[in-house]
Image 1 (cartoon, rainbow, N blue to C red):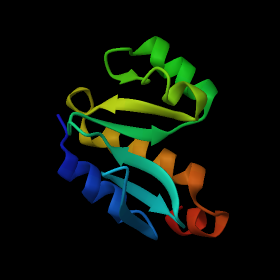
Image 2: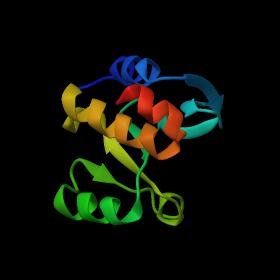
Image 3: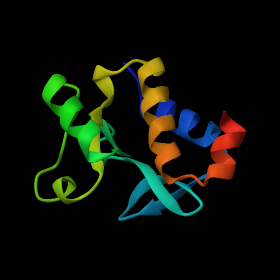
Length: 111
């Protein structure tokens, strides 16, 4: 099981990531583009994800991944239940979300 502290630690370890409140919730940004956010109940996070990949993950593991109807369905975004992922998977999800928003120069630093 992972926690909000794990999310914060992993997200802020990625190059040029900052934390900023938006809508009263912590968000993680690279170059002011949001790639992840912590939910208001500390039980889930939101992450950026391409829709084809999101569709696959939602179908394959609905107890782990979900969308908030009426909100996430119109964006390249989904929710992750923190209690359902380990630290390695959380790191992979956050890193992939970061890559979607980061410029190529920063991605090259990570690689």
